[in-house]
Each structure stands twice: as C-alpha cells, then as structure tokens.
Length: 177
Image: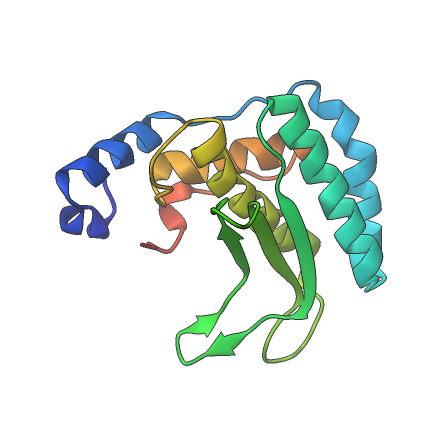
C-alpha cells in the first residue's frame, strides 16, 4: 500500500518508491556490540549532556556505517528543536553534495516545553535519519522516500539495538512526503 503522496510522483520516482517499499530490514553485523553505546547514550541524554550525547551518536553511527560498509555521515546534536506553524523538526538529513559530506542533525529538547526528548524517541529519530543515509549509500536509491519499507527498516534497526522493545505499527505513523 502506497502513501497518499505516491500519486504525485513521476514514473522514475514511483519506481524508486516501490524499490524502497520492498526492503523491510537492515541487518546490522553483530548488533550486540552496539548495546553498551546505547546504554551510555541513554545515560548522556538523561543527564542532558549535549557534548557526550553528540559524541556517542557519532560513535554509534560511525560503527553502523562501518559495519554496513557505507560512507560515513557526520552527526550533530543541537539543543532545542526548531518549530514553526507546521510543527517541530525532529531530525534532518542532508545527503552528500559536491562540497559537503552527508550529515544528520537531531535535537535533544522539544520546542515548546524545552524538555529533553524521551530516549526511545531520540534514538528512533537518529535511526530515521540514518535510514535516509542508507537509502542512498546501501540501497543505492536515487531518492529516499518515506515508505512502509522505510519505516520497517527504521524499526528493524531499533529492535536490533534495543531488543525486547515493544513493536509499533508502521501504519500508525503519520504520512510524510
């Protein structure tokens, strides 16, 4: 089942969308090795330690990209999410360009209340942006669309890193495009 914006895509984009939708998981090599970093990351976020949180996010993403044999991506963790009348921005991925390497930006605090984001939400946001990177570097897609397959890949990463976490429904996610 395609999300509503699918009908607005051109023929080439629809083909990429379908390719993306067919891939439901990304298998990390030896996911247990990431668990100490995950525990440290949860602690750093809980302590509101932005420099440590950023360093641990970078370490985690470096280990993931290295293990998956894809190009690295720079991670930045900022304080308060930007917001506007459209809502809050949770994370942002910028693919590699002619003059810049690929980058991920995530925020530690909510826009309205400026509260530290819950750890699982923070980690899922980071993994969401990593999935955009993997769409380009691992799957060699020309576009990175929010498909059901995309959200399943995000969940597959999360459940490898946080075993035993309750599985949420992909269909319950907000359509994005």
